[in-house]
Length: 111
Image 1 (cartoon, one colour):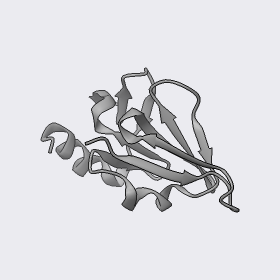
Image 2 (cartoon, rainbow, N blue to C red):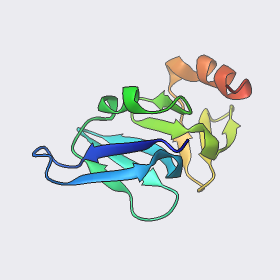
Image 3 (spheres, rainbow, N blue to C red):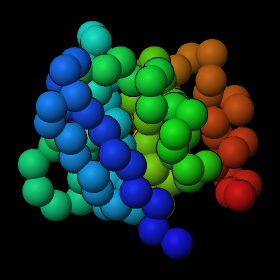
């Protein structure tokens, strides 16, 4: 099953995007905005905070930092020395200090 998410990008809900969540590598929270970074194409910026989407995401998405949610399918490796996750697109995502133990345990023993 390919989960889809319909998101309003503005407060008036005039502009909406629907896309396959399988193509989303990660979400970035930037103040009160959320950026959906996809495998291909331009990122989608919405005017909602990151926490708004957490309950609507499938279980393969995990919050690793207050500003970052990653799709586990696109994790290349975990650097436990530098406390970050290396994604398949080459970006390095920090792991929050308080979440390190539980995230490392979850990633070494996947679903």
